[in-house]
Length: 105
Image (cartoon, rainbow, N blue to C red):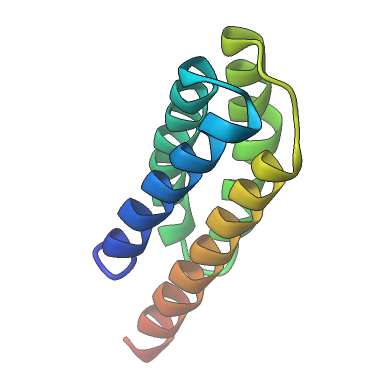
């Protein structure tokens, strides 16, 4: 997480600002902020070597998305898909790094 932490902060601010316009207001921006925070917490699962990103993507898709969508009443758009795939890409990077570290020990 330390490696991608600045990228996480930049993406959270960017996605929250975009959500203000996509969902027409502050409620949508706050909903995306909640989504990004929960995705960031799920990114810790990506630290598991070999399968971390698969577990992370499953947790994000099957648990976090339905929870946030029902809690905030936002709907899936291109923005939520972009957020999902951005966090999966960062998780894949973390999984590859941790797998290399594990194999070199």
